[in-house]
Length: 463
Image (cartoon, rainbow, N blue to C red; front, side, top):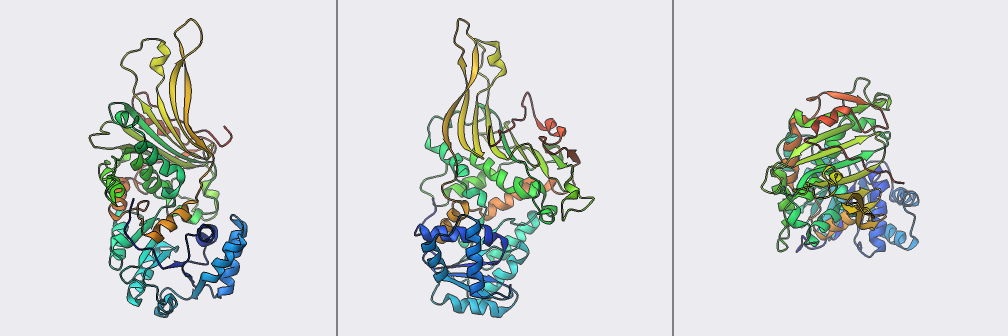
């Protein structure tokens, strides 16, 4: 949807020797080259005491483990790859970068580094002449850890890069199933007339993970479920479900509608959240023995606008749950009268969007059971069903950033609005409830439900 920008003429990625580069960036770069979408110099920057040959070996190891080496594409990657080994606090590192960039005047700087280093690198890019008009910067989440730090980070970014040149990457928005939510809503005319408070009773968004913190205890201690996925991934999914149609004539229309929707979300209070922690979390490496960090969060969200007033949006995310799956369930209201089977009055129509592990869009309806009686049963009308992403999210998002298309990236105002939504429920402002691994979290989450709503548990990979 965004357009009009010139493509970047170089790609610089800081943190070239790190874990993110190993697992995601090198595979994305090879795939972009293989598909003819990356033909510019690629400069890795890190402080590891490495040489260019070391980085090339690291890239080969990365690809061998994550997707395989394409000999032709890898040869082009090696040819285009450059490496600068230096301290981010040393001006000489950035002087060398400016020299290495040569005639490039529209470099894309990708900060695959800890957020604490964002300010150091951004300011050094500005001082060294590597951020002249036309340059862009990509920063990884988290975008702060609360509203105050998000405001500070955005101010630092804005001191060097204008907002149009700032790309806040959330890989979740580059996933094909997430994009499909938006496409399904606005590419079909039958949904819009009922997509409002008159017909929708409630909306549930569940992101379940059967595994624990997977060796990332130190990171999780600084984040927790609310910061890790609710404030960003889950609120972004909610926005795609609830926003109004973006103008097709506005290059930034989708992000403007998302911002408007986020501004209409009522700030959460302690009554709107239940936090949980699975038994055994304290035994994870890097976790404090008395940690009160949540590994599960359930929240009830209210969108105070004309379309959604009075409709509860429930979000649930947690680790060590029964399955690994992400699903959206939109429950419709009952017909005004029950004409046939009394059971009809206890069953509701739903739209189900399964985002992982499978990709499925389905409508649950009532259909007559064969026979003399006018009685019914639930049937699933599957609108779409396929197995996997066609393009990995990092390849999609890096390609968009290189072209200057910011559609799938978080804008400054939306990030700050999301922190305002969760600000009052961060850290230890609410009780922490224990739950057994393999269950659907603490029983206290039931209190968030209104009327006759109940939690819908997603199916597992083999269901």
